[in-house]
Length: 187
Length: 187
Image (cartoon, rainbow over all chains, first blue to last red):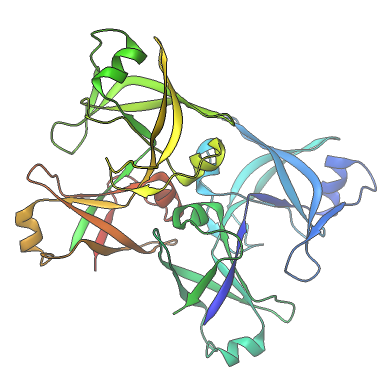
C-alpha cells in the first residue's frame, strides 16, 4: 500500500500557559499555513531552543496549543545540542530530555519534553481495515531510490481525524534522499 | 553475515598539488590517528569548505594524498551549503559539485569533486567467496534498533587492501541511531 511522506523539521508544541510566558499574556498563535493533519497548522511564530552546549534559532511552533509542551528534534540536532532524547510517540514525555525554550517575551526551562519523534503513519480506522492492517501497531515502509531501503518500526497512529500520511524527521529524509510528498510503500 | 559499521563524517581528500596550495610548498599531512583501512589516516589538518550560500569549518583531511581531490559531505551538509551533490563511489567525480576549499596558506575552487559517498563495504576477495557474495555488486544490510531498517544499494568494494567494514555517512548513522562500531547484517 502506497503512502505519501511528510518530512517534519524540528518544531515545538506549546501549552497555553507556556505560549503566554514566551509571547505575552493573551497571545494567540498566528497561522502561517495549514498542514495536512486536520486542524493543525505551522505558525508564523518561532522560538530558540537552547542547552548549555548550544542553541538552535528559528524553530517553528506548530499549532494549535496542546495540553503539553514538546520539542521534537532530530538526532543531528541532538548532537549539536548535547542531548540524548528518546524516540517517542507525541505526548509520551516521561523522562525525556530537558531543554530551554526562548521567545520574544520570556523563556521556560522544561524538565522533560524534548524527544525524537518516532516514524509514524496517520491513518483512519476505515483505512486500517481497507488496507488489511487491523491489529497491527507497527509496519515497515519501503523507500525507493539511490539511498533507499526499509524503515522499520513505523507506528500506526489510528484516529478519526487522521490524514493518511507517513511522517519522518529530517535525518530519515536526508539519509534516504526523501523530499516532502515522495511516496513510500507499506510492506 | 555480520559487518562492523564505520561512520564517516564529512571529510576531504587532496592531491599533492592542492595540499601545497592550501598548506604551503612541501607540506606533508600530519597523522592524527590511523583509520581501519590499511595505510589510511585522519590528519590533524582541517580545512573550511565554502559555497556562495554558506561554509563549514574544521573539515578533516584524510590521508595519504590521492590522485584526485574530493569532498565528501552528507545531504544535511548539502542543504546547508546549497549544493546538490550526486551519490557516488570515491573517485567517480565527473559532473559532481563545485566547491571552494580554504586552508591556512591559500584556497582552491574545484569545478567538480564534491559528492555524497555511497554506502559501501570494504571487503577482501577471499571474504567475497567465503561469505557467498561472489558476483554481487550491491547488497542490503539490516540494521537493528528503534530506528532500524534495511540499507539498500550498499556497494561491495573488493580490494586486496580492504579491512572488512561498512561505511555510512552521518545522515545514515543519525537516521538509524547507529554509532561507530555498531553491527549490521548483510542479507
